[in-house]
Image (cartoon, rainbow, N blue to C red):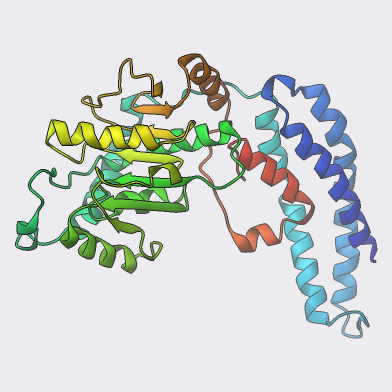
Length: 349
């Protein structure tokens, strides 16, 4: 084992301790506690830089040969070690933000996600994607009579809702990736918009013409295969398989809408997050089957007192958008435990 490999192996044990520190509740993290763990880690920074310089000099020597591996493999390892060293300031900044985090409300004010040139631009672009995923007017003659036309919630509003739901999922400490369902998904564009937060995302759509056109549109942008399920939301019996359920008043008949809502509420497992951004949601006030945790967001099967505690935990989760790259993760090495723990806290590089 080279000196460089030896130091990186030693660092793994230290970064695991740091990951354990970051896994503590925010109230149990402290600056002195962090300093005690970070100090021995920081001593490796200069030593790693020196070892990399020495290793680079050896690799640049045309006479260099390594009996344990090819020169190319050695250079790949050297480049990966160099990448890990360059991550140092970003790692430190990411960790510092978690030591004494401040509570941030789950849903921002509407002006924050609707007003301004950038938000208007994003919603303009999303409206075009939404239109491209719709059948032609002639094909839509088959529109089911009691369904609303496919009206898109503005993309920036939807992003604020799913980001809040994502933070709630992190606060719940889920051990498996949450499954997302859009009830009445139309052309499937909200499935696509949810994927950065919930890679296991699907949608229900009752109109076979819309299913066909939407599925073709989603295939062109590499959405998951068969992510649009043809089904009547009032007769669907698998809501319990999902962790986050979004529905934007897909039925215009009040009785049919209430029937759909009852199906969802009766099947949803305790802790399931319901996103219902419309005033007519029948469970919005006083329904014992769910409790409101944020504007338009509810949690099924738990009491209001439990919801308040969950909200307090979720507001301490960071607001970074999730980022995942298999190739990047593979090169993290000794930083992997810290990055994983930070992601569970809502922080990314």
